[in-house]
Image 1: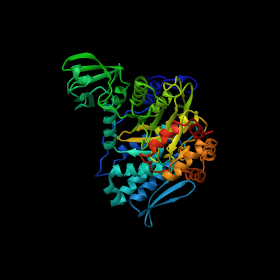
Image 2: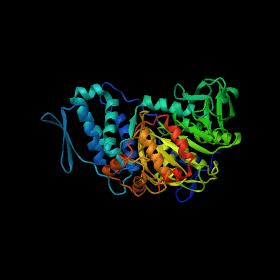
Image 3: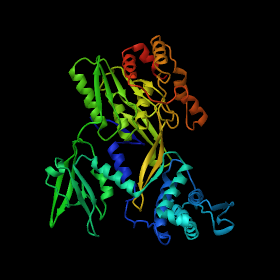
Image 4: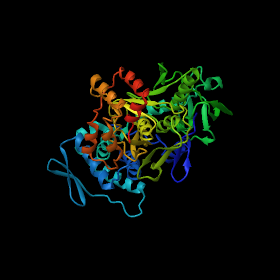
Length: 523
């Protein structure tokens, strides 16, 4: 069922091609020395980490910033660690003070015309590390927090000025996330860096019943290349992205054991178990999607086709309550199951590669059967995209409460210390042209007022009236930027909150009433 969704930016790109493109844009992680927490201030290592992060922020973050901004915001992070440190800024200079004593004064950095983002970010990082070095020498609180504390506070303070979702991920957190991503590849193995300079990338764990075990691989085998792409020493982190792929696809590993080298072809399989649940009641199929992983589209399509093969099916309910999102490509692919050709959504950002048009190719596997989507206040990100896309395209009605309103797309950028920046680089625009961020999806049947109010709204919809119609129209007319006051006013029409299991019965009733279903759709 995969491969129907497309991405266009002048020309069509597949989701897999876009993923490879993003992978090639990212710097290789984890090759710098670990930043020390004790002793003298490690300025060289700090310049590497901060310089890489600053260059990425200047070039790719959704919101524009200047090198001077990064310096000033980063210094504010240091004063949070030690409130006795204060800052004085003039039009051209920055001064770090401790009580009434000046520790350091430097000019604010400026990006010269034609200067690369790497050079501008490096200059800002160079200036900041001079101030941090002075603060380190003068403040026991700074020294006790360590270099890792300075890095974390620097990026956190910067992102507070840019958006609510970007953040710095520590090396420990990043390693755990990379291992989870590798484990999702469906190959039954995990890679890790080997020991020593020539240790390379080695197999660190094998699932006893997975494809790697069946092919005869063993813990300790060196992996020299993946699909013809050579792995450099200690390249296990970026290898995770090369291992990932859809179930049923093959990956070729060049393996070495002792002096023997050979190619091993492994076929990716679905992970054990399935996160998608189904329930059939009164010829209405409920598909529960708790998150959007690499296999979600396949599992939803399989559940739908299985139900269609078992007998009469009148309608479908997608239960997205509590779904916090996941893979953007899977949101588009799940929407594509129920749609014909057209726009799914688009992303817009400052970087050229951040602006993409996601399209659906069809056909509708449900063959036009009535579709209702159940959401709540915890429905977020990719789950909101599915609800908004299907509603905007006139394919589904939404029931529940207003959703989270997370409409920014994050890019994972590895840093030289082994940490990562999870950085917002594009904004989601729905098919009708409105931005998702801060607004969320307003349901056509609001259940926030309790059972009696929900029953009254359903009765109104059955009469062809539209209790949420005016609010839905206001949202469809929104264009970026949306004021906080306007977003809050729209969200107050159906306050975000939990949706009870009893509302599943209401969702089924809505799906089986053509008049109510049509009245609940946005226009």
